[in-house]
Image 1 (cartoon, rainbow, N blue to C red):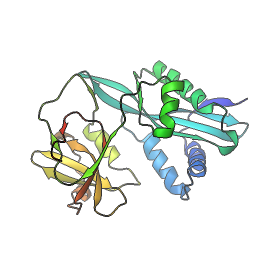
Image 2 (cartoon, rainbow, N blue to C red):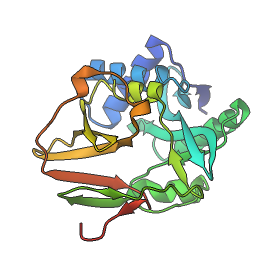
Image 3 (cartoon, helix red, strand yellow):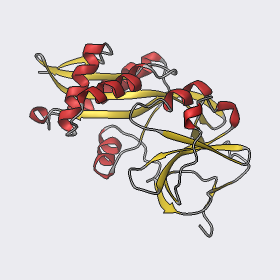
Image 4 (tube, rainbow, N blue to C red):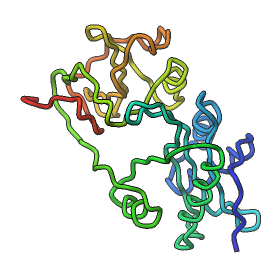
Length: 242
């Protein structure tokens, strides 16, 4: 019988979660993982992470966490959660702990006033989210790599949904301790990109108005990247002849 407890966001709680994630995902630098989790769980200006852990006596058996975000849904700003981290100790797998922790998280989130949970799952996990947790599958992500400019339509369709970034939330995102971002200007917009780990290929975080771009001088770099990697869903992009 497992003890289901809310996420512990203290330094000790972060340390325990980092140890589990390093074990499950074969990460070698626990100190870097602790720094990353503290940034991810505690420093988000929209709110602290919401999640639950499963315990077997004094051993953490499983971990599930969501992150507060704000989205524009059909023209209205709505506060919800992004499903981000899940891990089950090898000795406690196939005990339905993932669904148990997710259900506890969603009920708690509802009581806190969050309106939705959204996630991006890989091919192995999508089935579990849709069938076991009753998520609605929106669409697989579009994946493209190429050269040249990505063309966006000038008008916004309000009958859709998109993540909203403020100056504070974007400033927090750019302080990710494991990534280095670059910002470059394109006409009256600003493009934020980061490395993919492959030489000459950059991944785009997004294209933003000047009003939300934080004043971080170190990010204003012109980095050689002939190829662009795109992963996402955006009906405002015109892919013709690209």
